Length: 149
Image 1 (tube, rainbow, N blue to C red):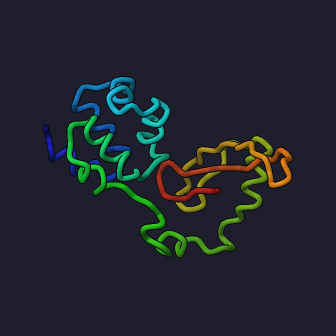
Image 2: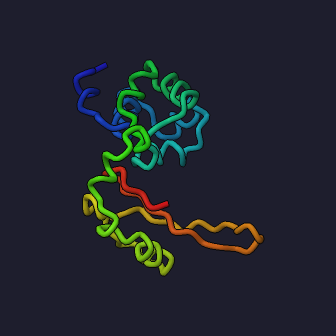
């Protein structure tokens, strides 16, 4: 294995994709080995998931033929670093309410307020406490830790 290229894979998404390619596995192969849905592997490799639970990390590491620490060292959870990313965005700089309204209206070309990358957006359908249907806007940035929840 070429560990030099592994060092350059500094995010979970790039590291998993690189390890999968070094092992000559397809997305389906890795999904079968790990018993994760293929959509989950796609979310990990696209950067939507930036950290794994301990058990999921062990399963995925075993499927990729590496120690779990190889994945853990590049995982990122914004809750691990409170205040680091929030301090770069003042409340006045991000109007999350209007961003949510745009998503609910169907706009898809919304840029990340932190890095300018086009956000990945979706609408979640759920029920409120009274059982009435409601919609929630969701968005995340594939390049940085910004998310709208």
